[in-house]
Image (cartoon, rainbow, N blue to C red; front, side, top):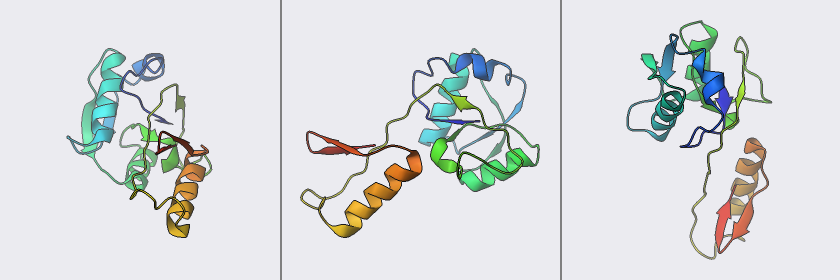
Length: 135
């Protein structure tokens, strides 16, 4: 499963309900990815049953492809919206990602290239509001 998680999980419940009894591949407890997945599952009416913990998205997708469980990963974790041996289903959720850099450094070529690359990998054009660059 992939998507842009949000704390509310609005609309994701129906997509996740059928996975109530599945073994789950979760990130390490205490990480944002773990917290978001647990919140999405709870919003769907269940607590995920963790079989494995992994923090590297390539590892998570490999475990899913091997049939060892299901997981929620951000869209930027998959190349071209595809992952070999994995069925991906977009969840109607959203997660805000922010990039922090030193004030006045926005014009630096490395910073600009990094922000553009992250935005492209997420499928979003970065925007700036009140001095904060948002994806």
